[in-house]
Amino acid sequence: MNICCIGAGYVGGPTMAMIAHKNPSIEVTVVDINAERIAKWNSSELPIFEPGLNEVVQSTRGKNLFFSTEIDEAILRADIIFVSVNTPTKTYGVGAGRAADLKFVELCARRIASVVHTGKKIIVEKSTIPVRTAESIKKILKTNSNGAEFQVLSNPEFLAEGTAMADLENPDRILIGGDVATPEGNTAIETLVSIYEKWVTRDRIITTNLWSSELSKLVANAFLAQRISSINSISALCEATGADVDEVAFAVGRDSRIGPKFLKASVGFGGSCFQKDILNLVYLSEHFGLPEVAEYWNQVIKMNDWQKKRFGQKIVRSLFNTVSDKKIAIFGFAFKKDTNDTRESAAIYVCRDLLEEQAQVSIYDPQVGEERIVEALGSSGVSVSDDPYEAAKDAHAIAILTEWDEFKSLDFQRLYDNMMKPAFIFDGRNLLAINKLRKIGFEAHCIGK
Ligand code: NAD
Ligand code: UDX
Image 1: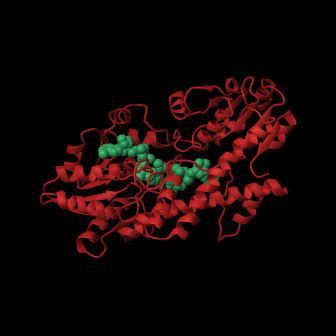
Image 2: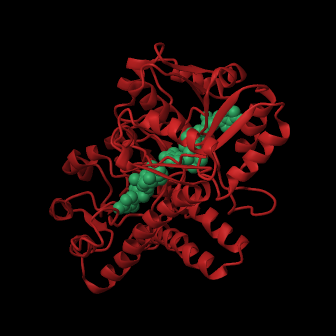
Image 3: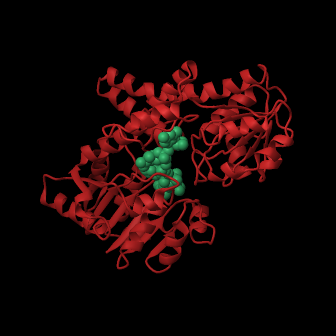
């Protein structure tokens, strides 16, 4: 069997590396229009940082895993074609700011149809897309194909960045949606099941109709994000009442019906998925004439925006209502630890608000380089350092915006000694031992305490 995956990003790369690793007899080719990205996948410095990824790529690349820009050739050779391209929020026209932009997905469907003229192929939607997208893909394939037969499956990806390889190795579930009403549809589903069954037990492989699979992905992300917005809303109440949000989360999470995960109060969730997918759900709900459903989910985003804003405002208020020309050290720019991804990172929003107040932000992140930071913020008022002590030298405040483990073992006495006084620290992740910081002399603030 031969697999092609269109899109060599955060999902396509790691997912295909795992499939190749677990299926040595299957040849897997990951293709992309971005030649620079493909060159990096073929180099010793992979384009994304993900613990454990390098090892799996090293063990498979050149054997049964290939990265290439020869898209048509890979499509032609493949029995199964995964579509794992980006589906960002639309920035123009109808649905701007909410709907998913499906232009890249559609381009893939059209390219497949134009290249494949005979035989049978299975097309797998790996990208996160609105419910009923498979219908459009089927139509494009059918009306443009010259005799080839296509089955369209939905196989959304649930990996989280930073733990992608562990998530792929040991998934809670694999979800495969297909045309369950036809024998051809069921055969296609079983073909994809057989690939995952090489390492995932059958009871964790869920098969559904196409629309349930597509919608489940949006709903899973909405539920996860909702938990974070829920605990973040309570963090504000904790600050007002003297309760401690970590203690509340622990006590609430011990109820087995609620569970302990995804209840960590923070400066706000980021990442390329949560906001985009909820906006998409909101748009779909409105489209189907359900404004109450739309408003319910929109509130998750509103609470997250408020949490990010609230954090920046707290810094300004604490620093005597002005940060103008004050150096603020930002520790962490990635949207979570163990990734170099900055998409929708809360740090971007907090920094923008501080820059608006004419602060000088000095940023340190263990994995995010200057280019990406300047791309997100511009260069005015922004400096990037590869050393946390340098970043905090002469600063009025430190803000922790990503929960990198290494921040826990920094020498805070040394940081304090080299800062302006009073020295403030704002822990947007409740990562640090706040009492120890206060003992050193910091005026320390955290979330929900
Ligand atoms: P990404 O932007 O990192 O990668 C997408 C890649 O597709 C890019 O390299 C781009 O050049 C390529 N591409 C776009 N159009 C193309 C075309 N016509 N032909 C060939 N290549 C093309 O995106 P990602 O983070 O990997 O996300 C991909 C999809 O998976 C999205 O729908 C996303 O919502 C979903 N998803 C992402 C995550 C995540 O954690 N990042 C998790 C689950 C699902
Ligand atoms: C998410 C989903 O978890 C994953 O299943 C889906 O496939 C893609 O979207 P990801 O965005 O990579 O994954 O990371 P995740 O661990 O979900 O974190 C998202 C954001 O929420 C991060 O900014 C993180 O810091 C924040 N978060 C997470 C919290 O603030 N509190 C928590 O308790 C958990």
